[in-house]
Amino acid sequence: MTSPTSPSTDTSSTRGQVSPSGTARTRTAPQGRFARLSHLAGRSFIPIGLFARLPLAMLTVGTLTMVTSVSGSYAAGGTAAGAVGIGSALVPPCLAPWPTGGGSVPS
Image (tube, rainbow, N blue to C red; front, top):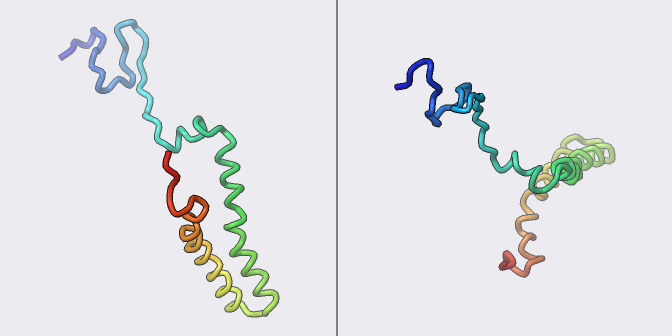
């Protein structure tokens, strides 16, 4: 046990404690994968990634609007938008192996 006047040397919890040199030590939280993403890929990666996914998100809204305005039926528009949404979720994983010839490219 340490006395109240001596600096603590325990490193298990260092927040707010004083090091032997007399300076305060603070513990930084470990960074996860997402926190390191902007450092690894560049600061513009996240905004560009969000912008690149916008057409896919807007595709169902556009389909709903177009089919509803042409047919005059919300049911037809909802059915078409649902089909586009389900298709855009199911088809890309099925098509993904084609560019690489059936699987991941060995490194």
